Every structure is written in structure tokens, then in C-alpha cells.
Length: 372
Image (tube, rainbow, N blue to C red; front, side, top):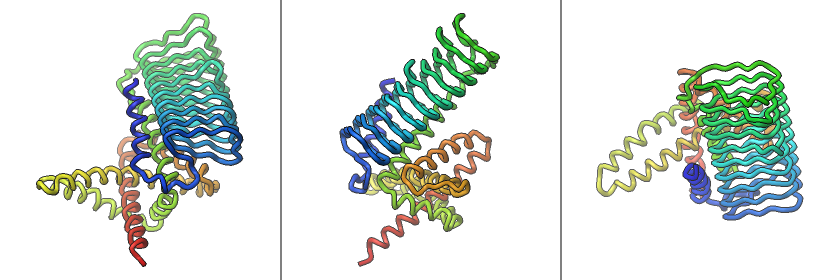
């Protein structure tokens, strides 16, 4: 578990190191970020260690190695990091992903959390629904609506006022648990349910091998993509929006350029690596190639989020709303990819279109900077 946490921290911190921080406009960034007092707007931060104990009037978006968030957030919280400790009060939604997650907060609306270890304390409460995923999940708090968990090990001792839907390798419903709705779970073995547990609704058990634990970790991966999308937008907001706009402006051209790059780039890198002088050049091209694939896919997700928001007549003029739209797009694609054939084809096409848009936008930026 420590290894997983270290890998996640290294990924996030390494990403921050290789990207130029002078491009950041409003977010605070650094090895250590400490914030106190009252913030009358949305707040964004990225760093190795982040300590926020402030009253934030808007949304909070943070990413880093170790995160400590407390006091009162009047909007949404979107966070990703190695270790996340969330306390205090969040008036709206919480969406977090990390290696280790500890929640001891009052959450006004929905909770989405995914990580290696997820702990919801007995003092924590969720006013809406809760979706939890990871390797080890323990729910001791209360949920006003339904609870959904996918994890290797699941332990529940809290109060859930709606239905409980579980999928895991080992499931324990501990003393003190109270479920007002149905308990529906899938597992290789029947759950251990303490005799004093109160379940008002029906108990439905489906025997199913936990050989497809990737469902939970697929959700974790989706939220890690959300983290990268947040960092990309905070560092390069203009480039990200311009590249996203190119997706809809000329999709067929982007698709063609993306397909050519997808095929030609690795072939060129392999040819260069076959020569003594071109070895390091080829390796560098491969590295940039995979970075471009990731950025291209995220740009396509930003386009999808913007398109969906316009379709629903939602305002995405603020940074927080645009990050929320791309989050929903990535999570939606995480579900779509489970559809046989259609899901894979759709994601592949989005990858090509996004890759082409990124390359064309880079070309445009280069030409603009080359002009006197």
C-alpha cells in the first residue's frame, strides 16, 4: 500500500516538475502551500504538501503529494494526491482520488472517492449519494441516500438511509450498521453480517468471482485522469481551450493528422533507435509520443465536456465549472469503455481527434511565436 501511495505521489509531483510553473496564472503552487483565513472566490493549488484550513466561498481544486483540507468549503471539492485528509464542512460535492483517503467531514451533497485505502470516519456524513472504490474501503459514517462501493475489501458500520450496492472480494457488515433500504452485493462468498445489524429492506446476494477487480481500479484510473486534466488546464488554460476548440472546428482533419502521427511516430523512433547516434533521440521521441497521446485524449475530454455542457445549456465560463464538465466527461467515458467494441472504438476515435488537435495547435503556436 505504501508503494502504491508513493507511486501516486511521485506521478503527481513529477508531472508538476516537468511542466513550466511560470505558465500558472491564478493557482498557487510550490513544494509547500499553506492557506488560512477567508477566500472569497474559487481556490486552486498544486504542490508537494498542501495545508488548507480556510473558509472558501467558492470551489476548491487541489492536487499534490499530501493534502490536508479543513474548515468550511461552500462549493465543491476536487482533490487528488498521495495522502488526502478531508475534515470540516463541504457544502456541495466532493470528488477525490488518491493513495490514502481519510474523510472526517460533513458533506452537503454527493461524495465520489477512489484510492488504495478509503476511510470514512464515524463523524463523517454525506447529504447525497456516495460512490467509493479502491483496494480497501471502510465506511463508518452516515449517508443520506444510496451507497455504492467496489473494492477488494469492504467494511461497513455506518448508517445508510438508502440502498447499499456492493461489489468486492471480502465484505463485512459490522456491528452498528443500519441500512434503511436494500442490501445488494456481489462477492465470491457471502458477506459477514453481524447479528445486531439492522437492514430494513431485502438482502440480495449474487455469487461472483472477484477476478474482475479492475472495475474498481478502472474508476481509480479515471479519477487519476481527472487529476491530470486539472493540472493540464491550470498550467495551460489557453492552449487547452484552443486545442479543444479545434476538435469541433475540423474533426476530420484532426482525425487524419492523429492517425498519421499514431502510426508514423513510433516507426520513426524505432528506426532512429537502431542507429548509435539516434538512440537517445528515438527514446526522447517515444517519451514525447506517450505524453502527446495523454494530452490528446484529455483535450478530447475537454471538448466532450464543453459539448455536453452546451447541449444541456450549462454555463462553463468559470474554471471550476469547466473542470467539473471535464470530470463528468472522463467518468462517463470510464463507463462507456465497458461497452464491448463500441466503447473501445469511441475512445480510440477521441484519442486520434484529440492528438491531431494538439499537434495542429502546437504548430499554430510555433508559427505565431516565429513571426516578428
